[in-house]
View 1: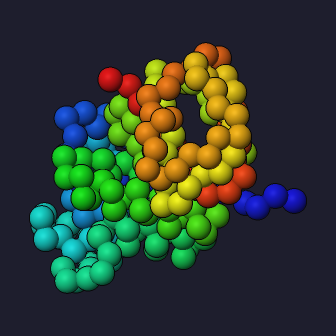
View 2 (view 1 turned 135 degrees about the vertical axis):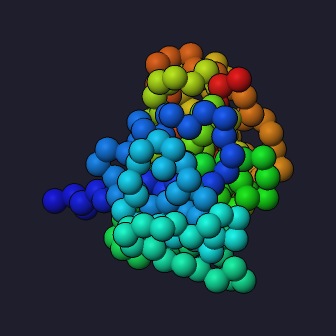
Length: 209
């Protein structure tokens, strides 16, 4: 019998001009708002199950929803803390919205949160209007869906014997190093592509202009 899938949605506070797409990810997920992500929830009429944050950039919500108030001086960002909390509660399928913004340092920290999940066998994806970012298992199938482009990067360590099929530029047993941009900005030849690699870590970015 397979492991039970427990789904969680984390809504973070990165500024975005359009957030209506958030509603596509709410159903069937435990919703955590991280800090000013609560303001987005209020705007969209989403009632989170839990609020987490230090609220250094927004007021503490006046609500009966369970709220964990963090100290401003701490080791983790509010979003990273929310990720760790979700995993401790047994969630193993995470979607992070509002985690890709104008500050690259925060965005990169959220990519590191994906790695934290990956190392604990927790599926996690970071999404905004034009991008989806995740670390892939050693064998994966990627459906085209709404995206025109994708890029692969060896993340933190070299990705050994990378093989792709169904792309415009397939690779066979290619050793993709952390220094290499060779697998940047590829596109779908088929409606889905298959990916495999022997060792390392492989970051996928699906994107549109």
